[in-house]
Length: 406
Figure 1 (cartoon, helix red, strand yellow):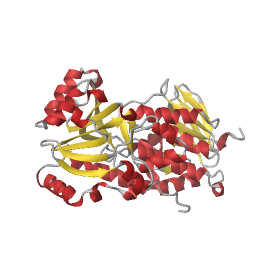
Figure 2 (cartoon, helix red, strand yellow):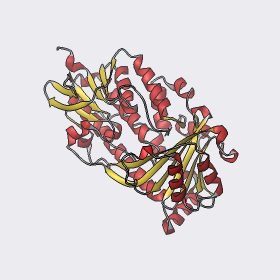
Figure 3 (tube, one colour):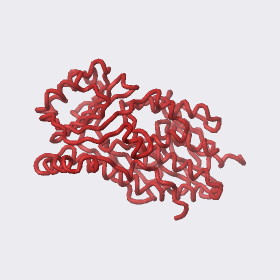
Figure 4 (spheres, one colour):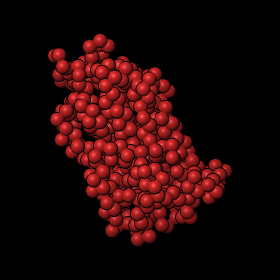
């Protein structure tokens, strides 16, 4: 029992949980990762990683692995979903490298998850435990945290990091039951072979189509061999127990109806998708203080702490930044094994940045889906300000170094 409180329990084996375990392992901290599923897997389709997240992966020695599975778009182009005209552009590729010192990447979620899992499996400091779902946790400020799993097993550790997503059980234990917030938006996600993409849209680009009450984004993944597409529209799930059981034809028909008078070029891309999955988008209000990211020996990371609407392409990046920050603080010999102090510094470092990204993600949803005068103002601002409006130096030059005091 003597060394039991020197390690950490990580609840959740998704991108955030694996990144957390890897960051702690690099600092010499042992952890056990509890994953409720019987096998490690990642659902969903593509994601974007800005230079802030790629910088972390590079520091962790994973750049070659990223190069082997990602695409690196040359630019972000914003277009009108109805008439097809270009509204704005942000150069990425070599320009992102020159401006921010690191790449802008697009990849499949499963590839990022696999990349992190492989790295974690090579670390003797990390124990992976499948089929392990947290039931409750109890904290003893003096000695540690005790976690009880469904089935009755118990584990003790110096700290518990909740990386268990939007419906986090760790969050409920730490902050009480708080219902998630329905956004009123539906995300249709699809993946298609690049050879099936209409020729005019096969460029190495992130393309965002904006229209009233909707937007569509597509970009290459898997070294350009596939394209990821997500269409977000306003609406509610029909009354059914299992929307994922709907047929592709039903999804496609509903999506085409929601897109309305979209331009022919956009519709050619939508019609090329062989299969759709449908996800209602939920989130939570932005963080209001460090107490919502850590208390005592328990902390939250990624979506468990700050779920984000996907309109700023930073959900995975903020989880990776959270993990990096914990790793840096774990490397500080001055902190010793004082996990409450370490986690307090973690929360102080992270909560404002995470809250800002949450707020901007929500704001972008309003701007992307604008109509009337707001739509006119958005288009005018893009035309006048160009890349200055689309670039986010404050974000892409992160993550910020951890604070060293309260």
